[in-house]
Length: 408
Image (tube, rainbow, N blue to C red; front, side, top):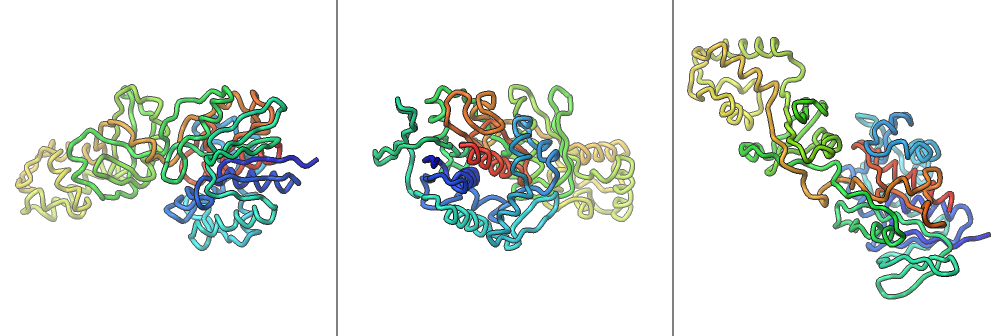
């Protein structure tokens, strides 16, 4: 028997949910408040769209930071191979880059969105753009009533809410879905920024604005206990630090925000302290008659040198041949552990994803149906699950969307 399904949200979760539900012979209407589908998807991967990650399923699960066990059924039912196959079918050729990240060969997120649109059209999904849902209610006869901003009312047998989180609000992710879920007495786990840049206390940090460091290692400490470490690339900003390894770190330290968090950067992780000291000795031997401020050009980026000199407490005009052994060893320790003090995360609107959301305890993990309201389903970022960067969060969207669409 054909059912009428309403899907709220035209992001990756909503599009997969709508297409899947329609492919099973249902009459599906997809509501999107923007004038086009996939607005947030368009800017992912710096406009290239990191579609998914080509790792095995267990690695997908291992890269989910919050409520990973909730996603077992979703990840195994609709896999990373499945989404790649679907996009290939609609003309998107893919490639695998560093860290098993999957991108379209064209490097255009718009190609991915067009493929999803064709998928929806092929399955006769009725796409309603510029249609903002204001409320979702359940009627006495068990139907769902979707109320639009123009006051019109539309009735459905089942509803899938896939409105995203509350990050990048300019793309339409303004938290509407949480309000709808709360209206059905669902618990909303406190919303927090995830994969977000960090503000730093130290006043010298803004001097390094725009400096990108590659092949460094970052550590985070709480009460002198190491809670995170990662090797890779980072960026200094006017407020603090950002970049891939910083965004990853944010997901691990957001449970300690009521504590003092110290961050250390190893600028030369490939060298032990002993080897780094030998490297510095070698550089100094070539510059014996130069001042300290002119001796570090082969060791550090130009923009970083004045800050390191200031923090080392070695006079910048001191000649290299006058630098003591203790000063040299202190310099080594500084380069191996440049210390920062975490102040706070940037606002939720600047986060890549939203941590928190509808409690997974109240959602059936094998169907994405509400345990409180028959016929109500959830998919994507609105659920209290989030993962690291690398395509994992988008895979959550596809997999949960597919389950919702398959079971409504």
